[in-house]
Image 1 (spheres, rainbow, N blue to C red):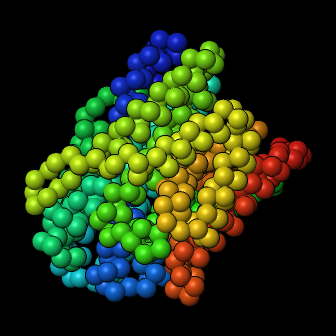
Image 2 (cartoon, rainbow, N blue to C red):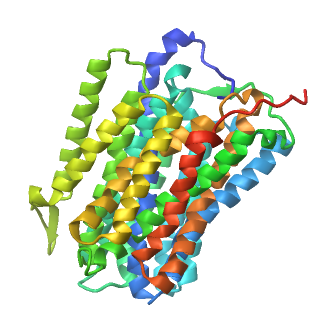
Length: 482
């Protein structure tokens, strides 16, 4: 973690309790970008139907979105190496505001895109939106990590990512209601995108205004940024970059094609709006896993209390998802129509399995990474070779086991780097570009062999994660150039 000092005239022991309000604010940022990112999973089938796109063409939505992560992160890295870290110069607060403004602009660009009705304009709007999310990632992730004691940084990140997943859980449901019911007039058209994305844009602008006037702790980075690419001599960093690439690629491509997977008659034969509701269970599982990870990797020493809290979080989070997905909109009238519990019993089974996996994996990042990636491969195998509700819920359960892979990979990849930690972090963020590449690879394959069989692509992704968890993460000592 970078060496950061606090500019306020308080001792660190006195300041830590005062970080709760800023952390709450930052956590809401995680919620918002989780929400807007997963809206892509609802956009893909929507725009695919409107513009009559192939799976490959529809996957360009994720290519435009996650391609921005790579381009913006690369530019940021080049500027950092040559002229110093921009966020350190302008401050975390201003960095966050810039990110929010770009997100708002990207959302508002959907309005002219719907008027012109050109697929390329939508992709441009998504690129601008994703550029804002990238800047938020660069600024808010380390800011959340330093808002408290260093030894509990992983716990705070998992907590923030848990709310990121909560936003992702709500997005398919809200998106399905807005796009397919409230603003669709019974038809699937691009016009139904106008008002929802103007609302999203307004929320980002409002949040930028709130951040502008709210008091947030100011930190200064006192670490001297190393120049050159010496960090690439560390084997576990290079292999970790590949791990981030395939993890993000695998997670994004699975979420991107789930609704189309649900539409298969051999699986569930669901319409897009209904599939969007069940997509909430996929991201809800990720939310539950990250909340559990927040507790599991926290500072609590009482194991019995820790396990009880984890179990309680699982139950409460499941009930939240269960009731949220029961909200129905019938011609502007909202009602609660809960899904019969018998239909979600498979999901409950997988949550129990997820809880047990946490107990087995403990707080060992490499063991958790290996175990969870192995389970995901098994679930993908069921998706490919089975049908009906078994394949349906196996696909949804993947979200729970994806939950904390990011934090474990990141932790392993920056281990024992010292002054090279900042460089490694920038390079790892660039590898989010996997979310741009892997979906179009699977989309191209789906056009050739079908959507169900195309899920062989993420199998290879998670197989690599097993390698990284077993061997690739090991730190190989090298001679310093200093």
